[in-house]
Length: 216
Image (cartoon, helix red, strand yellow):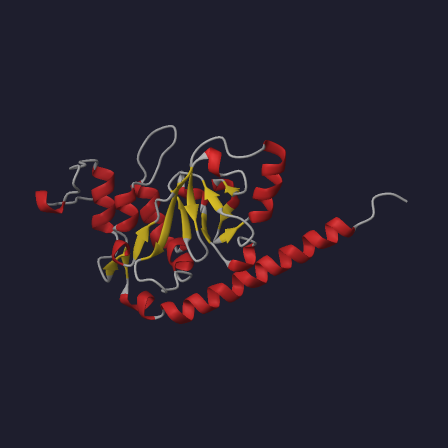
């Protein structure tokens, strides 16, 4: 049995008493700094009337660190423009779906993903994380957020029945170990290089598909 003991001062402003949230926090690593001290949540909105030229990103377009802009554009061609308000995301942001964390719907907005052509309008199911200090590179967050301990913490923190979601407070309370934070520059460089290779390879494959003759 896991037990969490907190004072009133340690509870969130809305005094949430859901035991899963606090047991998760108590069993998660205590070393390092809270994620919320390193990032801010971007909350800019894009209304449907302003989003005709935007690239609409649903939660299905983010997985294992990779943002699928090509898939989003295909879906938009089939389904039309956004029907509801979205959040704005920008190059260098990290998207974290609050819905069903076991799907690993986390992505870094990499320049090679094809995000320069139009504004990025993402589902309100995403937390859009931007650097608290302007200019900081958040690419290192991808392997951190996809690591087994963090994934287990997010899974344990989800609340709700039919559509379980991870509370904002649980995400931002995740502790970033000093070793991870100290290596963030080299990790970000490696993540950017890996994602660049993925996006370039995907683009090459799409070009081959488009060039394949289908009629004799």
